[in-house]
Image 1 (cartoon, rainbow, N blue to C red):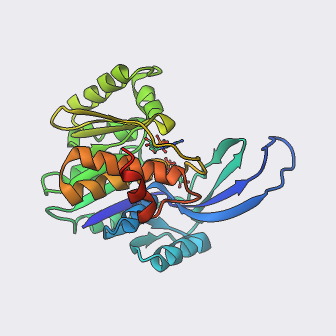
Image 2: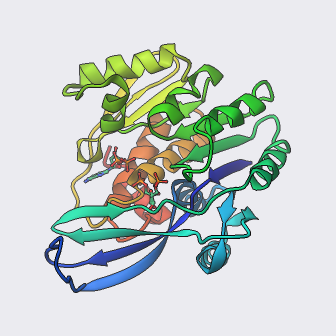
Length: 300
Ligand SMILES: Nc1ncnc2c1ncn2[C@@H]1O[C@H](COP(=O)(O)OP(=O)(O)O)[C@@H](O)[C@H]1O
Ligand SMILES: O=P(O)(O)OC[C@H]1O[C@](O)(COP(=O)(O)O)[C@@H](O)[C@@H]1O
């Protein structure tokens, strides 16, 4: 079974307007509420591709209830831990000329709630896949992803980590099956801007030397580069299409990669399905459907 963990789920409030002006009253042309949080997006796209999975994480308050109801209505299995206080956050995504995002801090997670999550993870076993992704609420220790991977070590569980800076770097010794930084996040880790494929490949190789098995670097409209565990490097561009909303494109890519790898076992195909999923989401209003993703697969 595939499990996703989202420490800080969200409702994404997506508003569109001709031009967003900071410091002024802005009126929207349209608005919608989407389910959000990186692991939750991965769960949704996996489900859209026909891959059964369970969404784990922490929820609180009426926004949390709305999120869980919608996930279940969409046919996604959930096993969340409920927090006694606070509210699952609402992240604001402004499409007005440029894309501006305001991501909330999220509710506090108590020590007890965290312990409850560790107990759930203790049930995973041989052949399971665990995806941990997204930010963590400010009250959690910054080694939390590392502690999860340490606890899973030696049990035949593949892990996928999509996080930034230390959250990502600290898990490398636990040999994650896949990490997916974007090119800017990869540059942040090495303290410089990465300008060429060679530089990106070199940095990906260094993360591999530090323990990552497969490194998938996404580059928004410039496509993606996969350095797989055999040492082969795969580079894909993007198909032609109109970008409507790139929120969740990275999460869709992770889901597509996993779905492709489960379907055929090879990394070239996993990368293609991941790339198709990323672009299909960028070309649709919300997260891409299975049909939208498979329609793009042949363009690579
Ligand atoms: N503007 C775009 N046009 C076409 N494909 C895109 C676009 N933005 C993202 N994608 C696809 O989705 C993938 C992930 O997007 P990216 O923005 O790099 O991830 P993240 O959201 O994690 O930063 C890209 O590698 C690409 O394949
Ligand atoms: O957990 P974080 O890093 O604050 O990010 C949460 C946001 O990321 C998203 O999951 C989108 O992620 P990507 O655009 O990186 O794929 C949104 O749905 C959500 O609002």
